[in-house]
Length: 431
Ligand code: F0G
Image 1: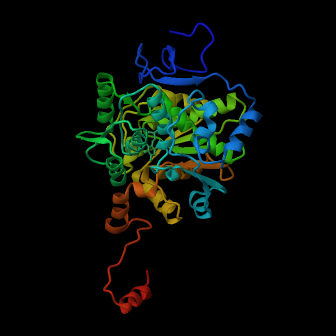
Image 2: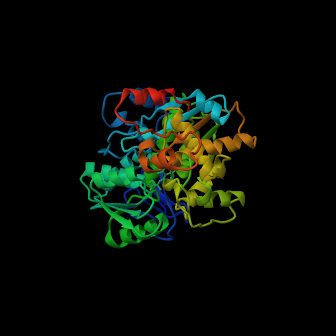
Image 3: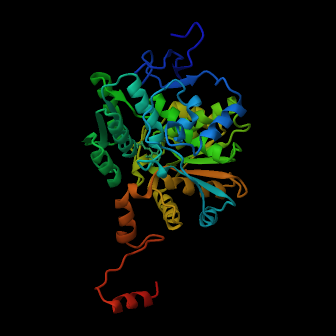
């Protein structure tokens, strides 16, 4: 259907067939064609100057929903939500480290560190909106498939909202910190003998047949929340966009969210120029990079393999939305080898910033783009670090303690007896 009279303040439409449904429709996909849904808002009834002023006033304001780095932008996220489920989240830092400028080869690299969110990843931004929407429509339970971060976030926000949560994760390959979170926050956790793509297929079937509200990033309300990574970073840059924004790409929800945020910010005159997106995948899980290299002639599906388990995804769900995001921002998609992303991670960690493996594809990818001359060293670049260093302690300990020969930056601990001479001996050793 299509709205014949004036549209409501917000509504959903299918990006494939254009079918329109009300904002509170609970289906995760278009019921006519199975396509992905998108949330639309009528242009806010404020000028860009008025909007920016409102966002500025709320920043660093009193504790409460509008001080959240998501709900501060509520007019362009979910204007009609009155009661929101907020931790709060967002308000993540924009960091600068000279050591990383040098490592990458740019003059001024900024890192938007989403690992500073309440459950340690950017997923909290989408989840506060997704769980708010679940409450609005009276969902009885919520569910997702995940490589670990979405499930940790869903579990925490469902606990806050008092909703039962079901999460499906691959039996092998979910980082320890993430699995531990979902258990501790109390989600019913199913370890599936299969990969993430199997989990997603299964949870879509389960949500349809069992009537639980699906909160994977195919849910368009998750995308609305994740847009605020971009809105907040633009605000931190006084609405002067950078030349490039670099992000990791897996299921492609975030690539889609970044594109939508930039499109809307441009349409509503919050910015006057579009930055370019650079979406980076791990080489063993790079179906999107392959499609990009072929001019998006077709969607690919691969059997994914990478040490960056967060983005070990072979059949990305938000493909169609992400293609639009890359096209509209004149963006690029590339992939990096596990070895390169581990080197980048070692550099990020050694700078004192730290991040989880998937986040490090950004700096590895950026280095490649500079080598190729696509990004100039004078360009203003923001890389989005999506998850916290402690999400994947297993990989960290293998890297530093076990890998043989020791990889770049490996920091082997030494075992000593409780004796001062032992400490002296060790300090005297050449490293
Ligand atoms: N970085 C991290 C740390 C992630 O956890 C994910 C996705 C991504 C990047 C990629 O984002 O999927 O929007 O392209 N994690 C999902 C999960 C799949 O289940 O936690 P994307």
